[in-house]
Length: 250
Image (cartoon, rainbow, N blue to C red; front, side, top):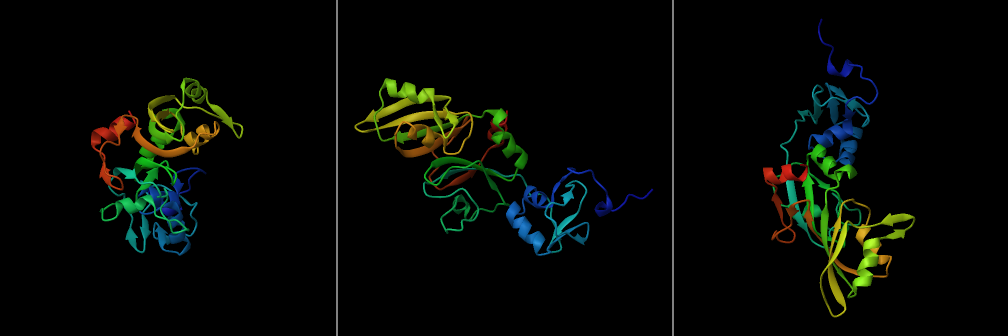
């Protein structure tokens, strides 16, 4: 019996992935950009124009084309960048601010997305990839991948204050803690702390220290798991080695 064409295959709800997500997973564009392409009628699935971004498709079987060109999976790319302070972790910013994609200018890359975020005032190690499965593995709370930060604060803490930091604080009904907090050095009215997190909550370190009226002057992520920022210049990017990619999800 002849196999029915892909567009006529009936799949149970939840099968495959949405069309907008499929275009993102294939490395063509972001989901928001995919939704625009779909709304403009530029996307076809199995030869038919598809205008529903939630349409479920099978990446292994369905032929997806944009502007008449079949979309095929891009090579997997894994990058680390040294994010400068002042850039936002997004593709496009409605306020016209610089974004982390400025660090990728001039590089021949498929569409890549940040793995997690660093807020505008934070700097340091940020990963970017088009491998959504790898990224989701790193972001899964169950993975508990350590993230190490060097944090300059506007006070010189004594042992009692450090102990309070380590006990954590409840902010807006949420208990904020760190895996470890150590004093790196202090001098005058400032100090540097090394803070290790094994979970990722919004502005976690700033909110935790702010609960003790401690001002964060600089916040630099220096490591994710065993991957170190090292001497990568600020605003620059480099490809991860195969060994680095593997060790982050080991």
